[in-house]
Length: 126
Image 1 (cartoon, rainbow, N blue to C red):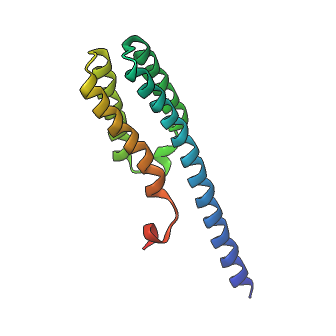
Image 2: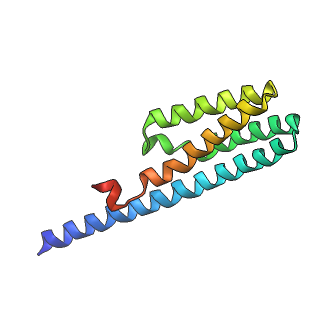
């Protein structure tokens, strides 16, 4: 009976840790997406200098909010996000609207995809 209680306690702790981690991942991704949406608003107005400032702010938020992501995520995904951000930053510096929009959309999709991929669901478990 003691072993069963110990196993159930351990299982509950693992599930609770997973849910808590997923919540933290979702909230940090949401904050990063908010910054991306601010950049979208600025790009719609063709304010390239302000967009550059917003990209610098996005990088700061990324480093702050996602510094613990490598513990639970595949490093390749994090590298892809960082490469995408670097490309986007250069497109903004060159004032290339088409490439900026395309790269920003890709970056936003990658960030949105991470919490969905890491969520504790039957689909992800099976």
